[in-house]
Length: 127
Image (tube, rainbow, N blue to C red):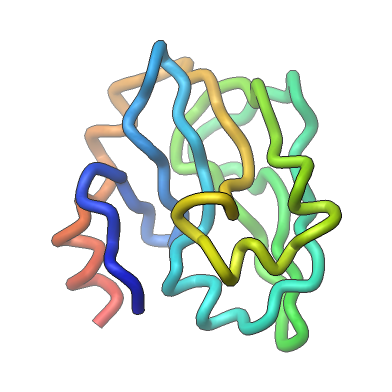
């Protein structure tokens, strides 16, 4: 497994969010998740403007082995999606914590971030 970014937060469903910038976080699936799925062949992205509560399914990632829902660990409005994943879904495999991001969410309840795992806790969780 690759290095787990120390400044990100993690969910028990293997999603990550970046630190908030102007109330917006970036969301993706972790390197652990993509390695368990195998070669990603399709990413179902949420629609910009949709709002979600923490724990809601916002999309899905399909691989040659399985399909898995993507859940948002925070509440808010989708303000941007990674359109590049439509053409290159395998980017999730190549760079799960970078170019393989799924969407950006404007937080409606910023305190929810505090309930997520830090890198050390997530690393332990994956063992």
